[in-house]
Length: 420
Image (cartoon, rainbow, N blue to C red; front, side):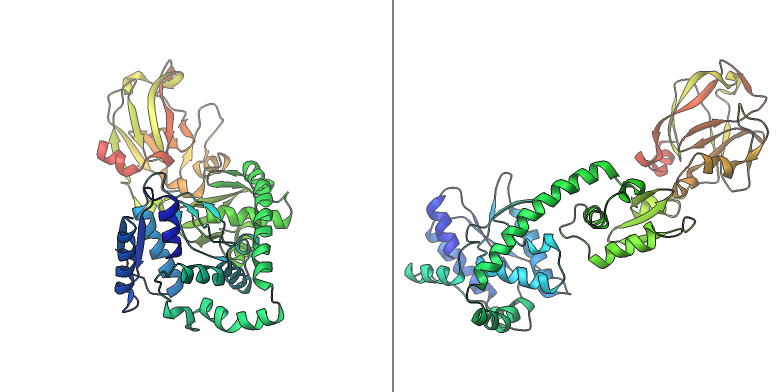
């Protein structure tokens, strides 16, 4: 309530208020009416937003519902202003310390918090709760004390009611000290982020992490990099245990192990000396979007075609397939395993599997490999690395070949079926 009056004084025409009704207490509707009443007196537009809190950790779910409501109503270039104060900050540090948080967690709340989805300003962060209460009383402002603030069933209330008085009796300036520590941690986080950004540039390309480059870093920098990479666009970093599992179960697994770890919405898979971050539909694309074992296509020069492994254009080449094949129905057969290929320019037949391994085609993309045939004669192979021309009687000087334009990461086979 003090924040509402302060903002109305400082920015009378640029302030809007929002009351989030979690609907967890009978009095919550009346509290919203009180906020609406004071907002009307101050000529401040007010939004009353009811939310549904999911089951689980009540404090966490309520916070998530609250911030979703904020984000829903924030307009472009608006700032969310919150009334967190110094005791809130100190309690946050203590609770995160007890949960085993690292430097990022212990830096707690920032006065100016610039996030991807919103910017938050906490002007009271260095003010004590006692000072805020004094000013509220001096101004004769109505306010509500939430009963759950004293319900020790909740961790924060337990910390406030049980732990806080004991610590403060022994360390009278504890609140100032803990709050100061959070700012020192924020400085540390800023320095570490500079190091982290440099490591990310050296080790990460989008969703691929170079393990050789990673393992050149100290163990501490490895953990920081992995933690930030796993976090991605999420609000919170993964637990220390989850980072350790990724290191032990995937990165340091035996070279021949099919090591995979599922964290949140991604799967982390090691292949050769790279660690890949994949969605379910990428790792298990064959299950999500299966395609026929055999289809027919016909080609003309300049055509753009889409097959399972990517998009191709039919071009003239120095060596290629006979122009007599243009316009004919050619079969695309899905790789079944056990096939052999006589690649143009190489001596003899050898297993297609060996060619795939030599080309280092990622295991989860190998299902996209298709064989182009005419009358049971192999003409070539469509792969994520391009078209492999096979030795056959259909080769000629100045023939044609498919040229890879777009790999299979940029479109689905379903779109190919639709286009056809």
